[in-house]
Amino acid sequence: MRIVVTGAAGFIGPYLVDRLLMEGHEIMGVDNLSTGDPNALKPYLQRTGFRFSKSDVRDYETILPLLHGCEVLFHLAAQTNIHESIRDPLSTNSVNVGGTLQVIRSSIESGVGRVVFPSSAAVYGIPSELPLKETSRTRPISPYGASKLAAEHYVNAFRTLSGLDAVILRIFNVYGPGQRYSPYAGVITRFVESIKQNKDPVIFGNGNQTRDFIFVGDCVEAMIRSMTEKKAKGLTLNIATGKPTSIKRLAEMLIRISGRRGLRVRFSPARSGDIKSSYADVTLARKTIGFSSSVSLVEGLSRIPLKT
Image (tube, rainbow, N blue to C red):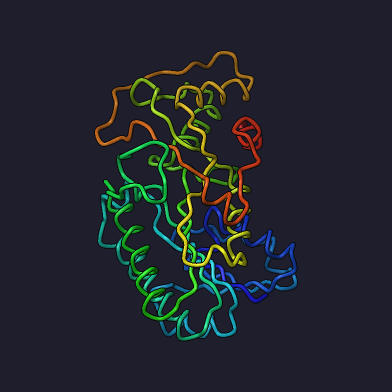
């Protein structure tokens, strides 16, 4: 099939591109490289079936021709940093909502067969119930979460108005090799960076808060399954393991995997606004696209380089 992947140079994008090329598809990768890593796509630039366009999803005139003849669109392009969304909510809204609108508009005009839209567990905010079901209350507590929920609503609105064939995937805490460190990176990336520098990983709060961590390869598997499964049409699916892991246990696992006996977990005062516990009900994804995570947390963490 001819497939377009926006946000191709992000964290998940190269993994998805690699898998699609392995299956023999023709891929157009799209990224404006404002946050994406061009080096991540270098291995694919010389491979048969892959082309790349440095383009911004907010530019309708540029995106429209890229989608002609596209059978499946994976719309990964997004501003994903929660702290950046608080600092600059207008830019986050422009990319995550405005960009999604332009992609939807272009998809409808180009006759794209199916749109797979990765959303986020951030749309739930503070959980109203556990495990979180796709029908659970959505009340985001960050501009990032609000922007992803708004984008979901636009996808669903145009599904009703124009018959857009779309699947929404609410991805929980995805991790794996290749995640880039920043002061506001996710907890696994922060812990890994500390351990690489032979520093104790620091937990905000008592460490009993839980998250649902899913390996990037499993995340890609869910995307692949959702691009052709007829039963997934029009659905919103949680993509996660369905298993909560405490942040304290996570830090201890990474220290143990690293083999650095001198390290230990340290604690710092809890940050306001942090969610206490979050994990998903993954029943619907299992029933509709046959997806269940296959990589355990220990196995997934062991694949992340822990040496500088």
